[in-house]
Amino acid sequence: YYRDAAYLGGTYFSEAAAGPEAALHREALDWLAARRRARGLATTGRLLDVGAGSGAFLAAARRQGWDAQGLEISPELADRAQAHSGAVVRTGDFASMALADGAFDCVAMWDVLEHCLDPGVFLDRACSLLAPGGVLVILTIDAASLFNAVAHAAWKASGGRVVRPLELLYDKRHNHYFTRATLRGLLQRHGLRVAHESRHLHRVRLRCRGRTDELLLEGDSSRTGRSRRVG
Image 1 (cartoon, one colour):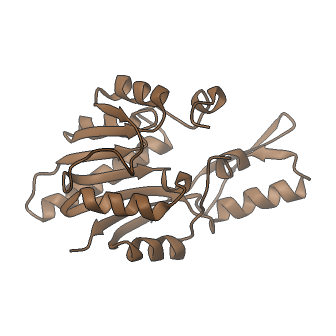
Image 2: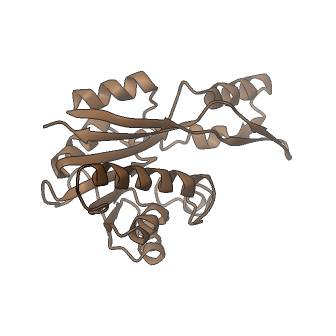
């Protein structure tokens, strides 16, 4: 699944330094810097990007001064992320990769948790890698968002002819979907406390038999959360 040419060459991975994804990266990094500054710490530290993808977040983190490295299950994406960001990006399974406990001030998972067979295993591993007071940054689909509801309704009303954005929401590689409540509960069960969360507007393009219509939804398809390790 993660070596599929259509997947690797699609629009899922953006290297752009501008646009919606880049804005989310800046928001997260600005929040991390402000949080560390308020605690009398340097605004940057050691960061691990799990599922580095195109390397866009790694590149943004390094521009702000983070000592950042990445991890990717796809060898092709690992090479791409390393070339784009200049960071070291290792290939392997996050759950079993040899990494030192307490080695990172931030672990980031952008569009990763929904892909896990067992999200709890990834959360436990992230907790073990965080230094005291460290932060886990997560971006995932909000299954209860207006974006999802409209996309699903468009698919049903069209008799299945509307294909976008459903192929992004219901990718064959997605194993789990979360709402605000279920994600909070999962984080709490694995020793994490939500320190901050944000929701994001999206301009949605509905594609049906060659016609594309654009909507700006007042809901969100994704949720970025920052959780700190408890204890």
